[in-house]
Structure formats: structure tokens, C-alpha cells
Length: 570
Image (tube, one colour):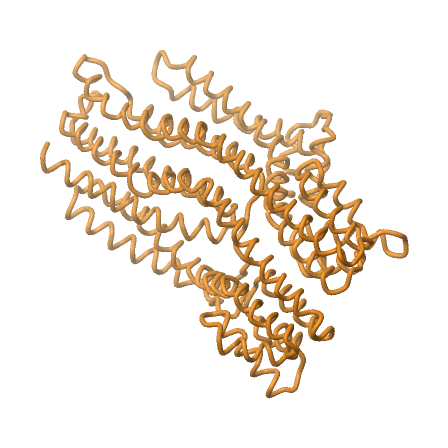
């Protein structure tokens, strides 16, 4: 939780001066996200936020048309309750998301421990290595238990697994098998380590399969009530006008641009926090040397794209479409330009990781034959292509020119992996450095390392494949099908005299309806794209921003094209 957010929560909590009682679960969630807030402060902030809604409800009641006061009051009460629940549940949602993201690293953490045990069967060393070469809450937690166990009998694995057993029982079974391998006879050690690795991989597969099986129902409901039904109601508006009734434009705006988006966000959050594990992309910050430090190109591009879209939409579709086109294309272009450099770095990191298994197999086979690790790296660089081969070539060149070891060649200040923010690649390089000191006996461990890297990649692919049909449907609906149906429906409704439905002139009704539904189509594109990306990769800000940017561009073009095309026939 950021400092600005904590300060905002404390400020809002002052609006509610009475005592409040927190819960143990809330206290636990705040501790997990690293917040200094007390549970009582969060509870008071929830009630304070509800008090902030009172002036809005009063204003809405005063401005509401005659006869709608009870409906406005009911909506205001629901809004206040929703705000209270959102603030109170916020820390637990954040903790669940962070924990889910952390558990995606469980197979990699176990893999690092297993590989370290293959080189030297000391559980204390394996636990420390798995913690030091990882990033995120899981590695931090293991590191803390390793520090507590220092100077005492034990590796820290039992206490660590007990802490995480509630959320991922397979992790406990896996690491206990790894720990048992430390005292197993040499002939049984490899089998125990293999079983430990299989336990965490099978546990991850089973949890993702269970989640995927229960995902179809909620997403179908989201699709039906968030896309099909609202857009079908738009087509019914002309029929309301033909019967002599009218629907206030303010009611359309409130429904499509306020209420429905709020419901979709809540439903998407409910779905996302139930994902058992996520496999987040490599962490790439703005400080990376391949990410430009200047930020002005993104907003500048957004302004130019928005202005161009405004002019084209007004001339090719209808005058009222200009603002919508400007917002959709401008925001979309700005997001794409801003996050594209980070995406490019990640693509390179993924390319390096994709070739790790082949590279390790080549290196391990040569080490088993008696070749030194340093020489095996240089030889493998000539046989492994792509981004991985480039990294190996760079490392081999640095070894030869600077007369340095494997660790410095890969992980030094300007090593081959200095600009490759991959935990998997860096832990692999660390193990290669350890193997260099062991010589020929480490060859089998390196080959086993190749198998483990391949298994980890396979688990990630299977996990995404399990929910691939759902995430694909969400992404396509967000960028194409939703805006297509929305644009066609607005064009049909306009052709049937939408102005009559609002009790106004047709021109005003068409523009009002088109803007209200168009805004909903863009918001829908952003929400569904975020949900699809979050299910597949976790809620990584840069990845979500990049994909939402493209979704907004495509959705804006699709919506306007549908209005223009259908308008030619009605």
C-alpha cells in the first residue's frame, strides 16, 4: 500500500469521529501488504467515505425529476453501502491479489531449492539459495524464516511451509520432500527431489484446472448482463418512444456510464481474487536502460491521435462522434506509446527464457563429458540461437576478454544478464557458477536443471491454456464484438427515431444516445481487457495499460465503423 493511499485513508477516517472495531483478518491483510494502518482506522475510513456520499445523494435528490425521488434515495443508499464495503474489503482484496501473485512463484522457488540440493545436499544452503535468488513476497518470507533458523537446527523450510499451507498445501508437501532428501541415502536422493518438484507442479496444475472449471459460469453471466442485455435494451428505446413514453437521457447516462461500469468492476474483482495463482511477467521498471526516461512522447502522441480522430470522425461518421473518437484514440495511443518500451524489454526477456532449457542441456551434457563449465558456455553459445544464444555469446566473450568467472560474466555490473530482469535466468546463472566449482559431478545437475526449466514453462503454458477460451472471449468482446454490437444498435435505434424515446428532437436524441453508449463501449473495453489480462498474467500495470491502449484504439474504430456501416442501410 502506497504512502499517498495511506494518508488518504487516515484523512477520510477523521470524518468519522466515533470508535470502530477492526477484525483479525483485516489486521492480517494490512500486515501482509506492508501497511502501517490499523484495522480500526480502515473501518472508520469506510464509514467516513460513506458520509462523503451524503452531499451527492442530496444533490441528486434535488435535481431528480418528479416521481423519481424514492429511486434516487435507494440508489444513494446502495452507493453508500457499496463504498463502505469497498473500503473495508480493500486491504483483503489487495492481500489476496499479492498472495496469488506470490504463489505463482512457488514452482520456481522449489525448483531453485531442488537444483541447489542436486549440487550439494544441504537443506540450509538450499533454503537460503532459494530465498536469495528470488523476488517477491514468497522469497522474502522464506528469507525471513531462514534468518530465524540461523544458528539453530533446521533450514527454515518447516516454518515457511506452515505459514503458506493455508493457501497452497502442495508447497508444504513439496518442500518437506526436498528437506527429506538431505538425509536420504545417495541412491534415493534424486527420487525424493523429483517427487518434491512433481508435488508443487501437480498442485499448481490441479488448482488451475479447478479454477478453470468454475470460471465459465461467472464469465458467462458477466458477458450476458454486462454486454448482451444492456445493448439489447438500447434497441428497445425507440419502442418506448412509439408507445408515448420517454426515457430521460440522464437515466441512460447514469445506467450505462455509472451503474453498469461499477457493477462490472466489482464482478471482475470478484473473479480475479479467486484465481489461485498467477504467473506475472518479468518486472521491468522505468529505470531500465532500454526504457526511455522522457515521458512527453506518450501524451504528445495522444493529443495528436485524438485531434486526428476528432476530425476524421466528424467528417466520415457524424459531427457528434468527434469527442468520443478523440477520447478513445487519444487515450489508447498514449497508453500504447507509454508502455511499449517496457513490453519490448519483456519480449526480449521471454525470448531469453524460452531458450534456457536447450542451453542448459547443451552445457550440462558437455560438463558430464568432462568439459569445464566456462568452455561449455562458449560452445553452447555457438549452437543455441536466438536471444539466449546472444546472452551466452556475450557471457563467453566477457569470460575470454576479461578473464573472469561464470558469475561475473553473467551477473556482473555489466554482465550478459545485467539488462535482462529475469529471476529464472539469473538463478540459472548462479547455479552455473556453483557448478563451475564442482566440475564434472555437476553435469547431471545442470541437465536436471534443463528439465526443471522446461517443466516450469510447461506449467505456465498449461495454466494459461486452461483459461484460454475464457480470456480470449473476453479480449475479443472488449475490443471488437462489444463495440460492434453497440455501434450497430445505436445506428438502428437512431434510424427508428431515437429522439422520440427521449421526448426530444431526433438529432439531440441520436447524439446523446450515441455518446452515452459509446462511452460505455470504451469503458467496457478497458474493464474486460483488464479482466482478461489479469486472469492470464496477473494485474501488472504496464501489461494491462499496454493492452487496454490497443483495446481502446480497436474499440473506438469498431464502434464508429459499425455506426457508419449500419447507418448506410437504415
